[in-house]
Length: 195
Image 1 (cartoon, rainbow, N blue to C red):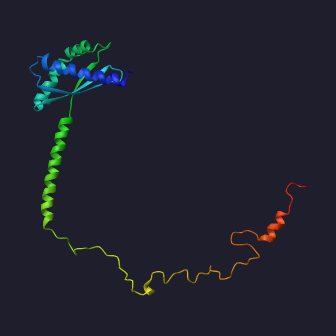
Image 2 (tube, rainbow, N blue to C red; image 1 turned 30 degrees about the vertical axis):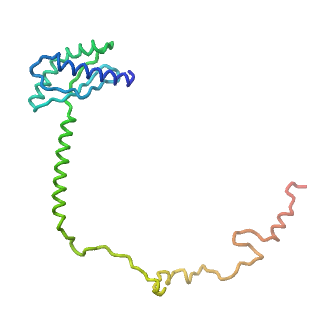
Image 3 (cartoon, rainbow, N blue to C red; image 1 turned 120 degrees about the vertical axis):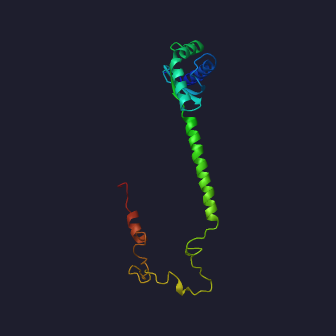
């Protein structure tokens, strides 16, 4: 495994060499206007994938793909001379679909914008079905209203069987479960050390 930084540097150098060779070195008449967009090198530096685009239609793409395939050996030897690596990577040419996909997305966005503009035109004079404001408003209680309408008036806890009106007996436990002072003194008189 090679260093990823070394693989990136080699990919950049391969892209430069292949682009310059396609411009000046390959004399195939089938080769159209080819642009090398990216090169990716495998981690072991054995394979290099060259991504390219072709200006023109499908026939131009097919002819350029055949020309690149026939010039692969020449391009690989030039890459080996220019990079000076021990094992020259094998070159694989792949048509880059990214510009085509970007163009397709731009077409879809323009269609969506046209539909949005048409929808704005339709909505301009439209009125809602039913009332203007179909939502219920919360009731506003005035300060001078009597408290008879209070929601807490009929509380289910008013006649609770758990209410105890008897005060807590001071001589027994308090509400936290502690004994009173008389019982605490009896426990405190014990000698813990056993003497």
